[in-house]
Length: 383
Image (cartoon, rainbow, N blue to C red; front, side, top):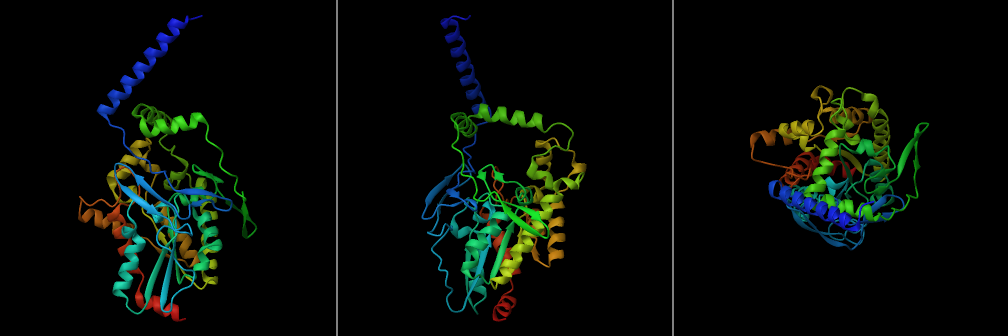
């Protein structure tokens, strides 16, 4: 049995080695002050979580520093009335962190870019845009949000911001943020399950230490990266679950996800129509779909065989679903790709964070403004 002196010497030597290892790694590859998961949300028994009403908080990383203000209804931005003013045309956005876009200041949000453009160029009406995006939401939560809160705003146009990880999370009852609702097929309809959503469990001391280490220690994050490389370095097809959507070799893996997603889109379109609202789906292109170098990095990160993956597969599948349901789909990917090719220095996404930066929000807002024709909107409103 080791003596107390030897044990103390072992512990002390280990700590010194860890300290020196951390110091060396920080000099060679400094740890990023990057925490994209710090959202100002609280538990919700129906949705799993929602933004905290009347909250003001700061998001700070090495790439951005933004103060996010949330109104009394749990929506980013100013207060919005449920009642519309005379002559007002109201647009409601549903979506996840791409829609909330807490990485940029409020006035640079794509939805604010759209609002400013419509009010400047379409003088026959006053356009109000309400962005209800909440980080981590998938289509199922967005459907439920519209049914409980969104329809009450009487939108003339409802726009769903569709992200590539939505299909996968539409068929699971929890996200890394916590438990969430889940729909399951039942005949020709959907049945809601996991509601009331279980309350989140208190994190253990080990989990808190692990999260702190991943955030602040280059050594800990390096060990995790090495572990992930070993995990995903097998057959060239193993990839994190939400990225199976790019996989061409086994379409059956995502068949249920797409089936549920199609049913949710159909339900949301019907709900919007019942509320007197037109409905549009906006496909959000990922960085790896816009920049070839990002796609190559994605393949390298997970040691993937390119022949089994296609970055255009999700939007083709979504287009097929929307065509069958007669849903308007706006796919801005070609515009993003062409804009990136036209100016190689232009970046529409953050370097570390996968979300749009201010330039990406500006471009998305412009695409929306160009696509939402004033004359068509006013004609639909009158009818």
